Image (cartoon, rainbow, N blue to C red; front, top):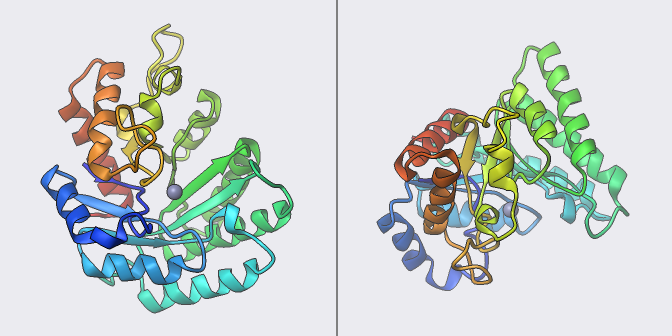
Amino acid sequence: MIDTHCHIDDEVFLPELDAVVARQREAGVEAILVPGVNKSSLQSVPEVCGKYPGYLYPALGLHPEDVGADWQDVLADTRMKIDEMGVFPASETGVIAIGEIGLDYHWSTEYKDAQHEAFREQLQWAMDLDLPVMVHARDAAEDTLRIVKECYTEAQRQGKRLRGVMHCYSGSREIADEYLKMGWLLGVGGVITFKNCRLAEMLCPTDGKKQPVPLSSLVLETDAPYMAPVPHRGKPNESRYMTYVAARLAEAYGTTEKAVIEATNRAAKALFGVK
Ligand SMILES: [Zn+2]
């Protein structure tokens, strides 16, 4: 299993980081991608990932919820840090993706315009550096898709690529299809195990009206320490709990957990270049 989105640099994990990492390895987690969100991530993400090279892979980006009055300074610092670290795989401890970036109108739209600007700028970095992106979208599905589509078209015009994963995707099938058309992937985490969650049905409809989203378009993730799956809901999440997500997907697709893990591993490796 590859965890494509895990905040293992979070305070909850730091006091016993060695033990936390050992637990994931023992449970069969092969690699963990660690996105940045704000200014303090510029220190914590490289520091934590630097302790486990080839196992923890750093990503950096400015999260939409962290876009505030100082966003331009933080963005400039983020870009400087990326240039200093270099890009994976050319640099073994380099940045593996730009993320997490995107739009979030859930708590506030005060910095909506700034969110748009920061998102576009970071998408342009991804094109210039040929890195994948990890996109967070909450209560902003249409604007997010519009900006990604515009930048995707612009990338093609520039002879570049813009590829990525919609982290913790929970939107409509129609919008999902738009990302799939661009070759993007959907990140699936603990939410799929929640009671009354309709995500499994969206991905693999039982009414036969739509084809299932291919497993090759999905990647596993946790968003740990958040979003723990049932039966750990409400407690700190860990990468090893992705087995519950894989099991739920296997049930929905009428296949085995092993097949789900193989398909999502392949997809993660193809997008991020993890070995
Ligand atoms: Zn996250």
